[in-house]
Length: 636
Image (cartoon, rainbow, N blue to C red; front, side):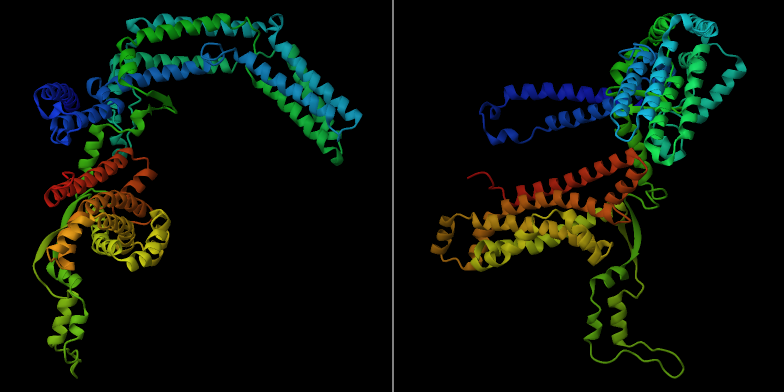
């Protein structure tokens, strides 16, 4: 219901915002001038249109719309899929879905094989005339067994009767299938089915990851579904009955048994030096057995059976009623399939999880008691302030104090002094109050990107400015930067992780390497592009070097630097996920890597969404910083 309401509101938002946008274009003076950059500002209504369009596409192609408006459709289409699966083996024999009769296809294939072996045997240098003649005779006898199967006059009377019985069963099923009474069941059967339906759960792949329930309930939950389920079971029995039937008349049996005996006798008489002849004989026997096991019938024998199958197929499609419309228009790029006693989504609905399922899974992962691998996506933990102090303060503070550390006394006690107390503070070995500190997969990834980016900016911007202003710096550092900059981050990842380990240091250093080169190039480009007239003007006004750097060069470089930061953010996120894929026990990349192994598509899409939202958060922050710090950008 919630998805249905959301769908209506989204469509309403798209239509309303489009109409509002068209009206605004006619009334605003800014839009009258082509090329005016002010036209690109604002436009929240178009943001709503874009976001709503994406949501509608997701709802539609994930089949969440179908699930919302027709919640039983997947279960009913599952029963239809059972019928189609049962029919497929029978239809496969006839030119219904295929281009030709299965018998014709088999005869053509084996005819080519026989012709190929005729050529191989005749041209083989490893066969003497006696063996060649014997093998050609066996091959000819095998070829001559095919007319024994395709001759209508040789068809066994029992086979004819069996085909008529099978045809009659399909015709009866077609007639009964159209009746309302066909779906009836006793009260006891209905109660058992309802209980089974209750246990199997509802349509939704999110349930699979939690309680191992089927992706789509296979037990029919409606009267219409019950009808197709019963028909599928009957069709399966009919299909099994038909494929047990073999067109083996007495003449064919004698011929095939004679070939088998001759091949067996011939191979037993061959010496070890005549291995090639033995292999040819074995291959001829394989051809004979394939013909024996295939369902080859005379061309006119199965026409009535084919007509009955076609008629039932028409009836079952007609009995689907409005379900056909739902399947066609609300299940795009795929359908509901059935195999191995289980129904499944075949198409975009499988790899594109439904928003409702994804949201439920996301809420579940946010719970501290559940999380992912016992770690929540984002939460907090109470940390003693001493741990933070111990992380910030270096241990050598205590070492530089005068005096020595305390020594134990004769009674085995150690009396602390000022030096040991300072060391306890520097190492965090003291008790203080606790404060909440963020934790979880999202926080770990966010912190790694933030620290790697920060270190890259702190070192990269000054170095880039220096290279843009100094001939020595550019000549000395440029080869070093350009040597490692084109190398993909993934190429560095194994080396960095080997040196620094799989903990946070290795990942942060890798992100630092990624952001450093980008920030150096951006800052250098900004410094190099400063207009010389502005520098001359500052010189003429008596500005010092520091003042020129502070008030002319740095402001002129800021647009390039901040653009570089935006580029570096995207590169850092991509690199982080790869690093967490390779080695990690926490983080968004680690979550996605584990989810990929277990085909948890909802979790994969959740990680993609989280990375996108975090990247967007970084970018919006940078946009605000750009608007505040360089309002002159693009204005002259």
